Length: 143
Image (cartoon, rainbow, N blue to C red):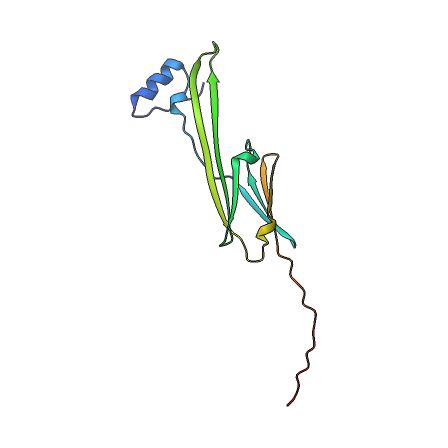
């Protein structure tokens, strides 16, 4: 049995004592997901931890100012049942976050690709191919 935290509000304590659990004391902590950014010669790779999320939960936008915006809006229903099968708690949750990243000037925003696999959203941001100008010699006429 874990210790029960008592607060100045008596109602959660009464419910905890009655149901012999801490459901009224639960606290939810919202945090932004972990993000990795990798650079190589050809691209930037953005990895965002996304356990339990599908591609339909994400929205990815690129704005004119080279802002990459990744947002999530996920609604889920969680159920807890006691031994007799009656609800002691029935919760609805809503998870959302928005991550804004300023892209470097050397990216090709038209070729950005994304996929969700094994709980990770991977966004591939290719770099623009530098056009090599041939070395030209131009003669200047003397007047």
